[in-house]
Image 1 (cartoon, rainbow, N blue to C red):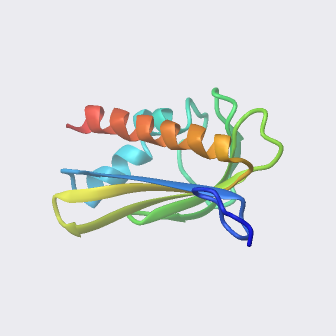
Image 2 (image 1 turned 90 degrees about the vertical axis):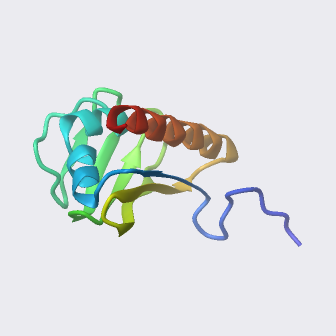
Length: 137
């Protein structure tokens, strides 16, 4: 029997998920997430003004993305590849809320190539959420 590592999946390499709930409405969360200030935190500086399905670009951090699904106030699904990676991962960002004044930001990334990459991305998304909390508190 093969032993699996933390975050290892049977078919999609490694995955990681990080969440944080903030005291803001889903509308405020979406507006911030998709604003220049919000995008800077999780992507870097970008040259587009709206998120559109099929849109592809490279940020100033060397991150290449292609938006696959954009559902306002709900979620974004995209191909996400850091400079130096051989293949893209799949990133899903969800906004989850069951109260009008509290929203959970959920970052889930899969198709990561290695346990070390998983750990790097876990720290990356934790830092992103900490920065979001500081900006939104």
